[in-house]
Amino acid sequence: MTPYECYCDYIAIKTHFNTVKFDYTKYAGKQKISTSYDTFTKRRDTIFFEKLSRQPDPHKLLLANFMMKQKPFVGDIVSEEGKKIYEQWNKNQQSLSYVIRNDLSKLDEPFSKNFETDECSHPNLIKLYLGNEISLETLVVLAHTFKAIKGWDKKMKDDFIWKEISMKVKKAKSFINIDEDKICKMVLDIFADLEYTK
View (cartoon, one colour):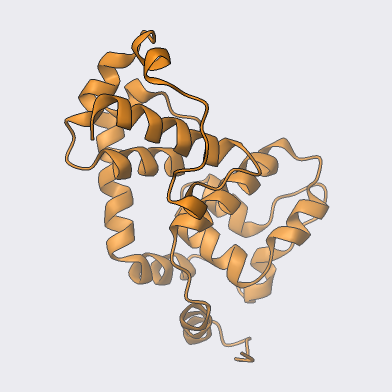
């Protein structure tokens, strides 16, 4: 990728994670983004996009940082910290089943208790995520598989922390392969209080 192509990808991924209606994956990142080469050359941070273009996989480096951080700056993405974030994200992608199974062991019993919430408290799943006890991938997979997001949005509609996480969970789903049958069976292996109904 050229520095300008990295810039375009950066803008598209950033827009995906911060705009409700924009979906990067729908058109393989080619939805209309109002940017131009002239705009790019006038930016003060073009040196970071040059550094980004020299990375082995600029797209995945961008994606990992936007998934794991809140509105990362391109300079942070090409830093050593940004590269470490990519390495951890990539490791999670390569062993997603292991990551989820390991995270499931940290949940409370009964299983349903981890999703319960009211206007005054976050569900246990969110607390574990905020405490870095479980991965974003696990939160996304469980929240979508067990249809929790709509209820959480309703019960925590005035919670600013949840609003940020809700957007992240909804947007990250586009980049995570969710096999609901496999996830349900994995949950059943660990939690005796559930019955397989799919």
